Image 1 (spheres, rainbow, N blue to C red):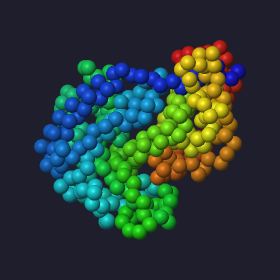
Image 2 (cartoon, one colour):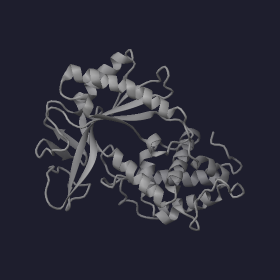
Image 3 (cartoon, helix red, strand yellow):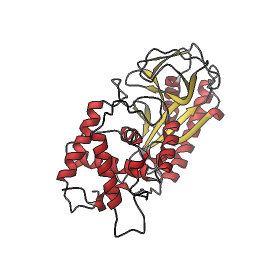
Image 4 (cartoon, rainbow, N blue to C red):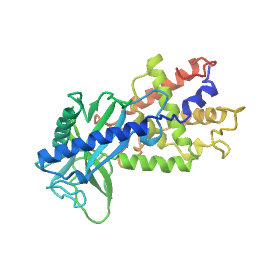
Length: 339
């Protein structure tokens, strides 16, 4: 039977986590002290050049009922060798779509290592290396596990004749080029640096949300919740929330709105979830019946699908959509609660 409209309504609603702001401020104090200690030990950078901010679903307001870790970016704008405002013509080279070779003595990998060392000292050896993140389990007074991402500010230049599937590009300024501000991070699993665009992702998401009367973020929460329920209670493969958000970002704005009204109205208790059910079904069928190979990431820089490890496989995306379709048919129609 189809999803109960009230279940969809509950799955799409904003989830207010009262501890997030407090947790972030307390985590920021710890990180700020770790950055200060790291700068005094290493000498390659000034703590004043570091920006600390929330990243991921809590920043995008697409967090769901099922809790997630608090992701925090620690972004370094310049070092004694590198200034993000002065583009390095020959010191960086892109390969395999988004990995970057560097030629400096102090790189994001070094920033990661020195920050791990000082954070570990402050937290009493509780830090864990988690690929691109430094993971810190819940601390006294902090309700969330922290995932801290050390990064460099990185101005990525794309030539007009290139697309985001080109490889082996040399970064340089010139006519007909677009410049995107991203961050350069270190991926321990493959021992390489890579480029990502958290601020562009967030900004484009806010624009999409405004253009759809807030319904884009509601639909992202809904699909993410269904993915989590399917993973917990069925045989869904794990799908990153980032991929889900990017996929829905490619759906035309008009599909998020039924009869030019918001999908949800807080005073519309009698019709709770009916509009969102109609839009959900419309969007799911749209995605199942079009060619999605040209979909882009929400940052509007990369394509969404590719063979490199950080990209989504197109076959996996189609399987995810088919799994939702199957769950839609078999889901208990009486169920209204998320768990």
